[in-house]
Length: 148
Ligand code: THU
Figure 1 (cartoon, rainbow, N blue to C red):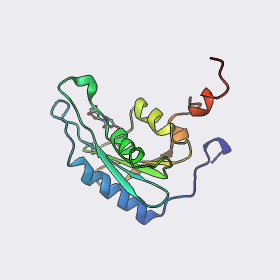
Figure 2: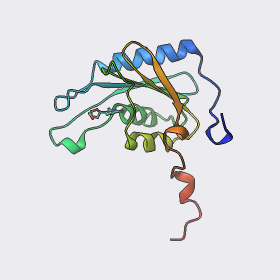
Figure 3: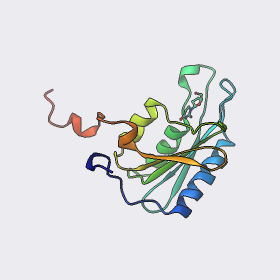
Figure 4: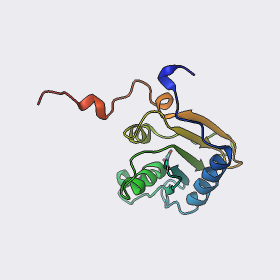
């Protein structure tokens, strides 16, 4: 692992399993009458709290929300701004669920060195960190020192 993609301490395998299981449970609540594409997410904070989310679509299509952003927004709205990991689940059997570009940017707002577990329904996963998913990203520090 290079310096640029250095992750925080690895997440214990039992906790990864728990996150994946919680993301699969959250997927059951997906509200996706338009896409019929269910997604669940489970987000881990440093104190061990897990926040879950599912996608929430809308008849005005562009208002739909991704599962990852729902989970992150739930956590932020309860005072959490530091995250260790997120697991994402869908019904795709042949490939892991990969977060959209908007969700990568949303994750990046809260740090580049935390873990993303992109899973399949059988529990297998691809593990990357936020920086690997969104390299050379724009973030809060880039706004510092700007002329207004
Ligand atoms: N979706 C997510 O919730 N997360 C992802 O990582 C990919 C896509 C949702 C958005 C929409 O409700 C449906 O999946 C189809 O794009």
